[in-house]
Amino acid sequence: MLLIMKKLQIALLLLLPLAGLAQKKAAPLAKTYDLLLGGYTGANAGNGIAVYRFNTETGKVAFLNQIEGIENPDFLAISNDYKFVYACNVNTTGGEGGVSALKFDSATGKLQLINKQPGGGINPVHIILDKDNKNVFVSYYSSGSLGVLPVNKDGSLGKVSQTLQYTGSGPHKNQKGPHVHASIFSADGQFLMVADLGTDKIDIYKYDNTRAQPLTPADPAFEMTAPGDGPRHLEFSPDQKFLYVIQELSACVRVYKYNNGKLTFVQTINMMPAGYERNGAADLHVSADGNFLYASNRGTANNIVQYAINKQDGKLTLVDRYNVSKAPRGFTIDPSGNFLLSAGQDGNTIIIFKIDKATGKLTLTDNKIDIAQVTCLKWVPAE
Image (cartoon, rainbow, N blue to C red; front, top):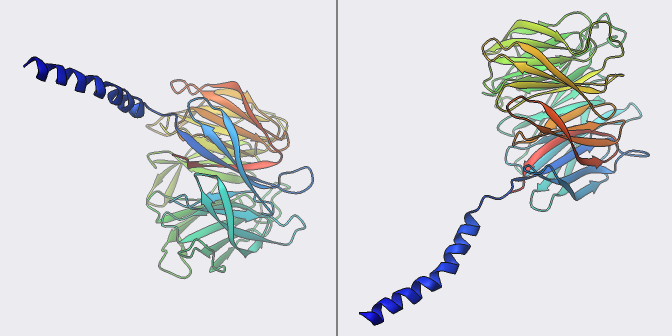
């Protein structure tokens, strides 16, 4: 019996280190993401699409990789399986823009060009994919059009399959013609909302990816904003009950109730005090819990405005304003909801705020990325 007990004790002693290893392996790891940065290239600008590794516990970033030779990738879209990246390519001489398809390795941050297609429009400023990765949708500011390009099984892009050319104008000096600026899908993928900054309209389309030309006008086919508003970017609340639209020219946010392709106006709220001039509202994002909305303003303001969201009626209430690097054309909230990153296009710096999830308040950290002319920030899981 004593011999058996001694053998059991020895076995337990041998197993203890293994148990310790198992405990260490089970310990939670810091979640990391690849942060993809798009913007302008050339003299005094970037070199292509840069990739950084971001720690959502500490907010620290480290350079990972970069692909050069991608002309002015001012907006990016990521496929749902994270294997492909699609980039607008702005022709700064005023000619036709293009769209690039790239293969992405999230482990190394390496990007590889697959192909590039002419976009059929001038000055592409926004690109998205449908939820099934069947088509990309490109917004063209200068030509005032929306282009659709099919996505092949290998991630490459086909030729333009549909172009929607807009017409009209608005009362503001920057509204001499249509300026399509962004689009967004409903969660079910059945409707596409398109912001036309030049005509103060949000156009609404039904979407059928089995058709060669997948977009047809919905009923009603559009929603008008206020004259001179200049709708720019759009974002849904997490529950899809409300649509928020930032207005570049009037620097306000408009709130709509959303139901099955139909919009009902709820509220307009100004981003700056009455009488403030030289506005240039740009981007907006809703926190993952749906409690707060953040919106950026350029011009002479150069700030991010925080609003509290009433989840019952979607209305916004001003909470605070935060100074950021010059010309915050694009900003993002990391997937954990712990940090907000604001890219100063003309300040050539991405500054990083810590988010208090209870209050939504932002606190500036010491972490930053010094990089020129960034306009778009996108996330891909690295673990």
